[in-house]
Image (cartoon, rainbow, N blue to C red; front, side):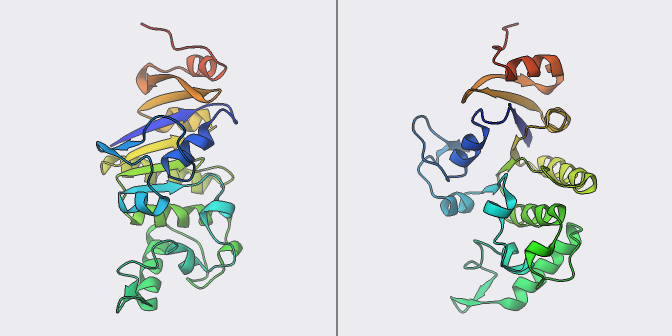
Length: 224
């Protein structure tokens, strides 16, 4: 696996890039290729079936439904698929509860239970549930947009460990973050965006904070 970090000052196209790859925004030019397949015109649900998971940067607006329970949010967009349905269309509530309990245990999510409203959890625990849901699909590609924004240090460190573990399993991860320390700590390669385009891609072992910072301000990557 590999983690490609996408760095840039807020408003330079990182959000739009993530949404295009996740199928949430139409592509105006170019192609989105995954494992040699053109997935440019696929819907988010089609992309999920093709192994693409997405952690949105605004978890409360785009990652969960605030009025739903922990369990309902865990199977969001998966409730119509096995093993969460039986006899074709009946929700298998026992299986949903069991899978959610296992995710709570495995991802160290602090919640009174599976039927707790998601909005009563802390930001870090909500983000860990979103992470658990997306990784439970065993993705080929994970788009992680601002995965530790607004969470406490403990949750941030936990999310970092999970992303590194996922890379070891062979997952391709696109990490979009405005936290340059996070980008430098986790990435194998760093792509820098400025005014809607990538101005350069640098291997992590060759990258310096000064170089990445200059590219974020619009400097082109110098050829060796």
